[in-house]
Image 1 (cartoon, protein in one colour):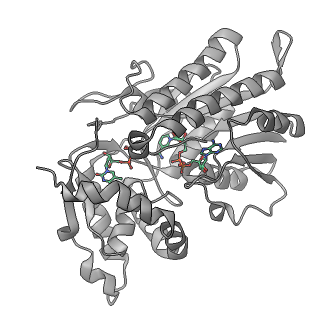
Image 2: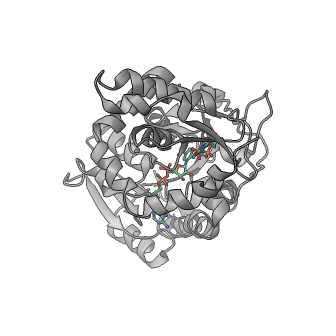
Length: 363
Ligand code: NAD
Ligand code: TYD
């Protein structure tokens, strides 16, 4: 029986990972430590919460007393650190929490794991710390080329700078103390349970509620989209088979411009909605509005996944068409989840982030 400390497990990728792992293995125990910030939602784990192989702890990864106590209570074998402030636009608006959670929080987890797992000069057998990072640490690409694991770090937003800082801390615990670690750097995820501040769920929600579809700049920025379950499968492989001390890039092999993504969402919604659904009348490309660009907007991300493919036999299996259909259908089938999340403070967030931007159309 392996015990996982999953942090940020009530968020988008963390909750998908917990679902994936509980379904795949019947001999693991997962402790989910999550602060339940605006993007953490226990409704993401409703079907799992009563299971005997899962425990939820509400708390902050920067709280060293709490984190240390978890290592005393549970025989933790793996830390999988998803907990983060994760949205670039919020980091531009106010980076403070990004520094606290993403950097200090990772440091606290590393220190607690080291105290629990390092016995004299020797690390206990079978332990590992897995840092869930992002391709954004590599910066921005031009029209050609790919990020590989040896691409120099060149973060350009407070979010990606905080994630890079955390990666360097994790690397330093390997280099200095020989702590067993892996770092994964994945491209843009999409799928169920993603908070509607990110491009895909935001556009789905705006389509369904008749709002305009705010595309930053010229809409030609490129992201490499991966269906979240493919990412979870890769993390599982890295946890269980990844070579200690290694970084693994994980990419969807699926580069798309933002404008292409928005048009695909419109087409997919129109295809999936019933013929007589009144919302069909206002879901159209006429709703697309090119708005003021994001500051320092990275132009293109593209991942070279050769290493994880050669070493661990991983490749993404969900095609973009299939993934988009599944995702859009999930949001249609879970309208209550979406309504709950977009009531209350989300409305203030939307006004704060988009009111001025929409006034200043892109030229
Ligand atoms: P998310 O915002 O949906 O979830 C983050 C979770 O962390 C939430 O449940 C939140 O409550 C929790 N959290 C935040 N601060 C915390 C703290 N101080 N203590 C404990 N819990 C805290 O994010 P996500 O999209 O699921 O991303 C998860 C991880 O994957 C992040 O580390 C992110 O950098 C990385 N990542 C995301 C993507 C993507 O496309 N979303 C791509 C690559 C890597
Ligand atoms: P996002 O989902 O925020 O992910 P990231 O910035 O981490 O890649 O944004 C994806 C792309 O979509 C990015 O180029 C910014 C763009 N975007 C818009 O054009 N409009 C929006 O409302 C949002 C949220 C993003």
